[in-house]
Each structure stands twice: as structure tokens, then as C-alpha cells.
Image (cartoon, rainbow, N blue to C red; front, side, top):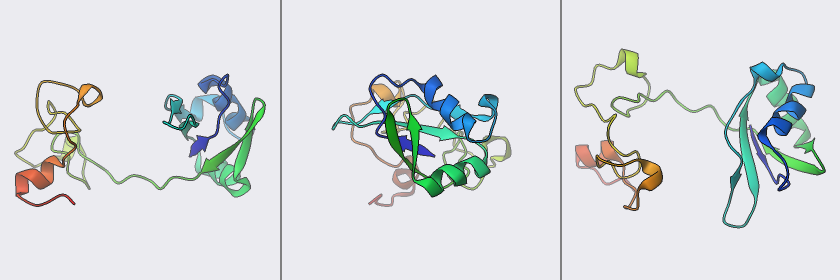
Length: 134
């Protein structure tokens, strides 16, 4: 669930509390940090029980603090292996010989993290296979 249009004074804890009021325990909620887009829209992703997600998504918004924030129900992400970065399996079941755990997730090079990367984004799997990623 993505909540967008949050007020500047809204905290993650406050947002989680409002979601929990709809029908789950605060301990059932996982969330990211509030992010600010270039056009100053504040958003937050929250993972909670599917029944709560459906109730919130059906309404299309949720009141958090002074704001009626819009909500989007996000599609479930496919499984992805953090060892080889391919999809449909996880690291524990990886049979691939390639280990990309120490590579930057943005450019594929070693020695830095994606948050510090200034290189052009590229798909490591496509590059290794000699295929254009576009």
C-alpha cells in the first residue's frame, strides 16, 4: 500500500497508528521511511494484512493527522534472489554460479552502494547476457 500526499509534520509512527485503527495490530505493520518527491509530495509504503489493505484501497484515501492522504494498492513484487538478482527464486534456493551480492544494485559495479552511485542505471543480468535492457 502506498500512501501519498502526507503533511510535512506526519511521522511514520502516526501513519502506522492510523492504519492499525482500521483493523490490525501495530505489530502487523511494516513500512518504509517517508520519502519526498522532487515536487514535494510526501509518500510512504506500508505492508499490512490484506484485509486492511483492501478496506483502505476501497476508500481510496485515509485520514492521517490533518490530511486526507491518497492510497494506492501496490501489486505484489515477484520473488527475487539477492545473490544472483534473477527472479522466481530466493537466495537459499539459488543454483546460479553468479554472485552479485557485492555489486551496486544501480550500475552493477563493485565498491559502492546504490545510494552513492552516480553512474547510469543498467540491468546486470541483461548486460551479462549481452542483451539490451530497454
